[in-house]
Length: 285
Image 1 (spheres, helix red, strand yellow):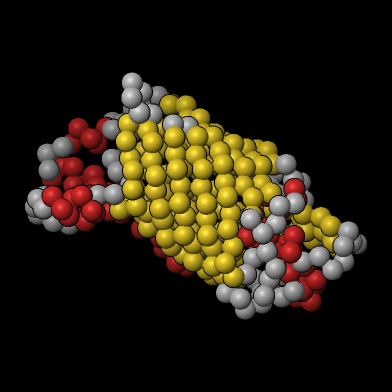
Image 2 (spheres, rainbow, N blue to C red; image 1 turned 90 degrees about the vertical axis):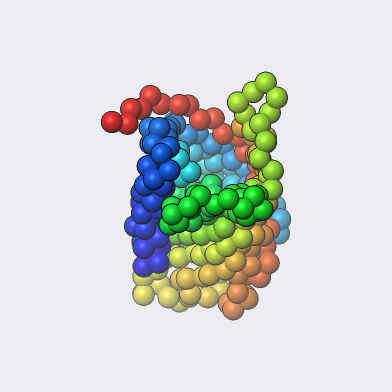
């Protein structure tokens, strides 16, 4: 959590460095290139290892996002989910809860479920801000400009229920990854784009709420077979965007320690969605 906090504290430094870069290279007109949007997203996601409805996510989110220079960010809240809780009558069931740990947004039906996202489309501009010269090498520009970085922090609240056992749970998710744009082109006679991106980075899950209380240590084993509260892994993603539509596959790899069905080892998540961003009038003084 200290690392997460440090990352979000340092991000304004990245933004400032790019603003300073614009001034340094006499492109200060970009300082006023701030765009703010009302962001909506309808998303469907499912784990490839568990196709039950309770293990699938169908959510709608609403929030704000901004873009300025080469930096972007957003804050969104869940306003609809097809699942109110994760529930089963099978006293031996564990995979359903492991899948919810892998895909925590599959039960998120109130405003306390939110997501923060920040990133930069290209680390080339960030590196350039520390140099007294523009990068002249065309090969460097070609390979480095598509390289970016993105960090995401999500909080999801739900209820895990098994037979006569029920407990509120908070799942905190953090991801930090490098992105690379393999394709980024404009559509003919349109302002829309087609993008193909890959990303690789770190992801984690932290469990809290009543579930994380010391007195519930033994109870936790009833749901996922372990009383551990923190998990770290690696995530590789491929994402295709065509105008407002997108499809994405995430391949996650969490340690087999604990051997949690539906979560540990190599897991795949497939997502489909549609975004609609409404520009909001803004003025930078």
